[in-house]
Amino acid sequence: MISVRTEASMDYFETDSNSSAPKRVPLSLRLPVQVVESVDRYASENRMSKTDAFLHFLRRGMDAERGELRLDQLVEIKEQLSEIKGMLLEKRGDRSEEAAFVREAVAQAASEFPAIERAYLFGSFARGTFGSDSDVDVRIEYDHGMSFNLHDVSQFGKRIEQATGREVDVVSADRIKKEGLAAAIERDKELVYEREAR
Image (cartoon, rainbow, N blue to C red; front, side, top):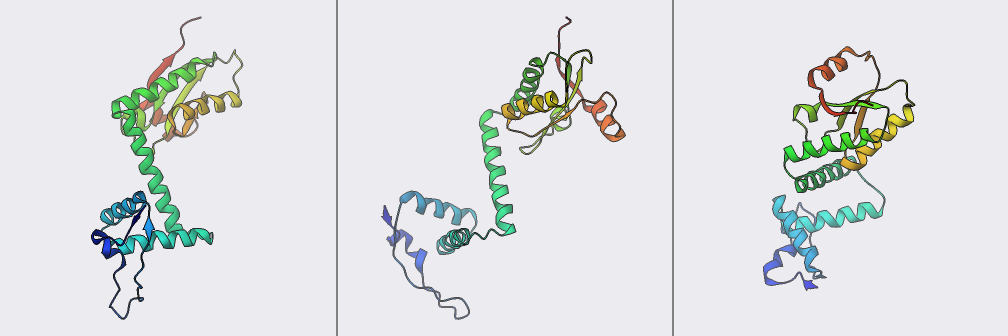
């Protein structure tokens, strides 16, 4: 624990002399070092005073205590989650490694369903334009003489989601009615799995 009233951090609690702004009262607290460092970082990253950063977090805590989450807070939470997801993906390696990881996850999932004959990636992963929020688009062809239903399609998609941490869209229809989707699949598709001849 440290006191935030150290010489280096006196500016947390300056009294505001501007009469139009709410009056600020000097306050001394003993806080864990990690809390003070987190607030320092936040203040620096957002180019605000340390006092304003402390007030920001104090207000957020009070709003949360009252159960009030504003739309801008929800958007901020979503952005922070997206950043965290991006950092996790960076730990997994560069873009080519991430694409290879997704290809392998699709191939592994397809191999677990005997009816699936071929699996293709299409969309951003096939084009190499994926980002941290991109989903995985998969086109499958299956043997109609074997048991394979909508539940199996759903389970196939879930296995890829669990492996990659990404949402998955699976196209399994023989004929795709939406011309734009059919054209996109034909243009982008990349074969990532083909069952060996029985």
